[in-house]
Image 1 (cartoon, rainbow, N blue to C red):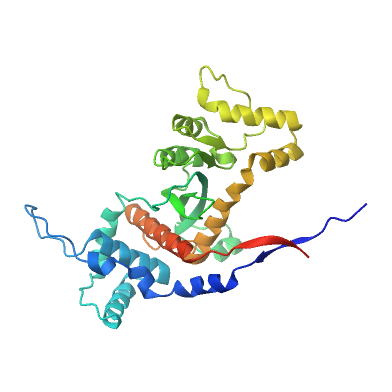
Image 2 (image 1 turned 180 degrees about the vertical axis):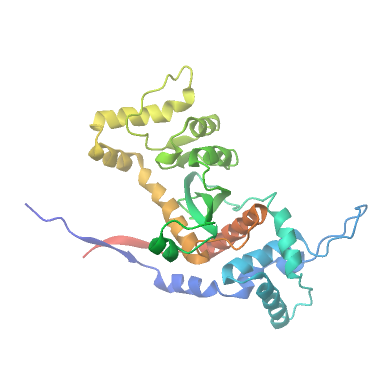
Length: 318
């Protein structure tokens, strides 16, 4: 009996990836076209004092805050220094104005990517807003005033870009939020991946109405549905039949995941891990509307980092 050769995943573009990691700290990357769009356009006929700063300026400030982990007051000082170093004759908004405008910015968010993804992976994770630290809870039991939010991401498994992002209360189910996010999926998407938490009828229905194939592992003991009444369960029924034909045990589920390409969903978990390592596992904002804007700014920042360069590797025998 021959032994199976051991393999190891090795990065093959270290030089390019190192340059990309270095460029993440370059101010020119994060400002880009913002100086030309920093001031708000004049609006005739509007009641009240006209805005000085555009939405792009506030968003740019929030992105820089997320990248360099700055409090609001330190953010203003950083922007003043950056404009002076870059010889830009532009005013800098007060930290209170950035905070107020962020609440309105979180109401209507634009698309995160200009690409045309064909696949999308859904996943979620919890982030802390405020409360006692994990060490305190570990030592003395359940803590008080521990408040969490749930970050939901839709990631393109090919480009690793965040296509959709959504913020909800911690008790919101993945399937319910996935249904809401599915309504915003780009028309180019044809396949959606999700873990067992997305095995819910409304999510299947929304994907079916858009002609998107759902690759989601059905819950154990799941039953076939009547497609005459509920045609959106077609992909789920196919998965149940495939699992039954393979033996309907743990080994059958492992084999089904390989045959269906389900393991592409791990890109979503990788994106969540990168998100927390880069920006931390908590939000600075306390108000829900501002937290939405903070998540949007972090999603933009993460996409820019992704475009700068990603590690490329392959499995090799060792």
